[in-house]
Image: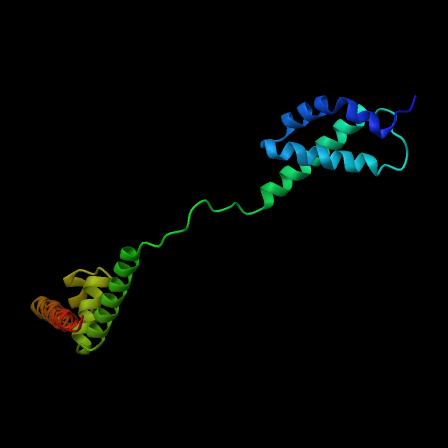
Length: 165
């Protein structure tokens, strides 16, 4: 025996309860129910078992809705913040590194080479002396003068920044 689409309205509470078990939000129940009715109304032939058909249609619509919701970007519940102090610190650190690089690049060639090998590459003083043909005392002097130059130039820079800023 064939039943008409309108008979599905007689069991709408049963269908609503079924849909509620499929979706997470209550506001989606009415959407799925309405889409189910529209799908059933668009069926070209009469439906033999409207209750089973309605449940199958509702399940497919709920799954499709869930799939779409999972693929959508999540709504932002708050405005993203930018911690200005972290950004300021990063900028200051970047500027200090640029100043250090400039100071080191202006050092005499041997002093710069000794300093880079010692502080950046981590070579020992005896390794540097052997590689460059320098005495241990000479290596020590180059390192001391390089550090002194860095300290002096950075102090000049800091005091100039304090005067202008």
